[in-house]
Image (tube, rainbow, N blue to C red; front, top):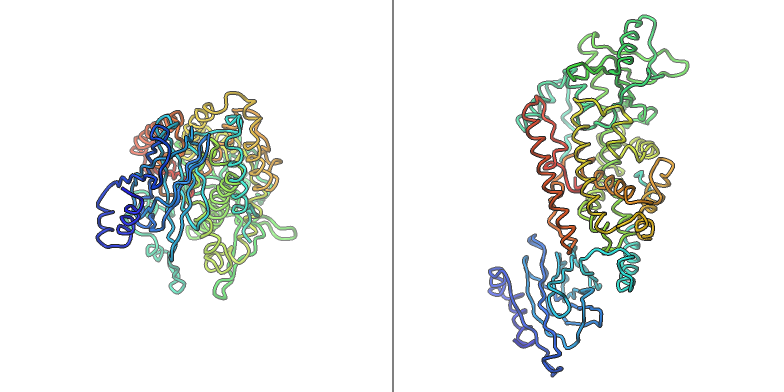
Length: 609
């Protein structure tokens, strides 16, 4: 088919109703382009078969023409505006090139808009021809917007050391230079419909906002929320399992009056046997409360002391709602033996405070914002050729988008926190700043965090058990991946892009967090694996333990690696996750309250909600 006829066919497909039906009715279109001008003898011409995959969503295609270039070791060929990706599936092209390109290094593309520009989501481009040794794969997985030239390197992962002839040096540098203009790290602390008319006036009114029968767990929580056993269980396995720790001494803020000598004796007994635990909300002390619809709100900073029973239940012993103040009487202590409504109100204040720390510290900061730091540092420091970029990029999908929404609608001025939350109108920013200053590297690594909080041997900590197993699976996956590309500790130390990435996270993104254990350099393969495992767990399991997402861990469809080694490792990871998922399912079948937050099929692959 001549280029003129091809152009007419493409115009027919793009703009004629029958042509559109034709395009959607066919899985593939094969178009052969031949040069209209005489070229070299057929023996010197190279035929290339090009496959282009568009995204699966309805609006992923574009009626705009796309210009393609093939870039090889021995030259570059402009193929012209040969593609109009109007539909969601795969288009196949065949072109003949008079220049021997050698091994293909890059595919370049540019979308040209006519009167109207339509964005195009390109999944990948595959090319087979002279010098490709089979089919060369060029992953994209991004929206093509505007008319800038996009360069797609061949999908084999390469560190700087893997490119001794510097064939990709210019591309790596230009890609990072452009990304740094787009992605910038700033301060971590951020400077459904809401019914504001029908307030809750009785305990029974909560049934209006707690739907029936959503899950067996939800139904049991609905029926048992007043019980002490569920109150304690939530510190172990609820939405915020990050606060509880085993007591090593009686907290200094716990002032016991003389008439509570029996309570002191009980606390000291539990302390000696190692069964005394505490949940301290001192981070909230002094936070300025909000005013909502001209009504003053209040914020408590409780301390809860709990005892671990031999049967694994965690029961509250005493609640203190505020720390002691100089010159003021000791704060009131609430006990399970108090009148039922007084004890219930004390537990309710604790749950209110737990909501503040869950949403701001455990969910927003430790989930969303730390994932954003890792994501932005990766985009600024690691080119798309880098193996660690390819390993991490599936775990950043939609994170920036959801965080923009959070800044715009949740914690912004006149956002949801300002409108309905007691720490809104500035208090939530204060909490984020305090929590950021206390972030430690060990707290993001479950084996270290659980050890530091004394929870490693607590069998009723289902969060702890599942977090360790999931961390182990991710760690083994990372170790296998890293071993494919780094054969020695020296290879890690000598990778300048990797070292820049580590510094960007610790010094820039986390504002000098090396004094809190975060590394500023990576000196060995073991250290690299631990750091990457932390990054992936933070973007997946850590966030899932405080909020459910959408795409299951390890089940991403994007294929950023073209070489078979990483693909085999990913498959092994998926198989291990499936086995772990089944084990947790069997365990949960025998539990009154099944714990599913860290079940692999329920763990999101990135921070998306």
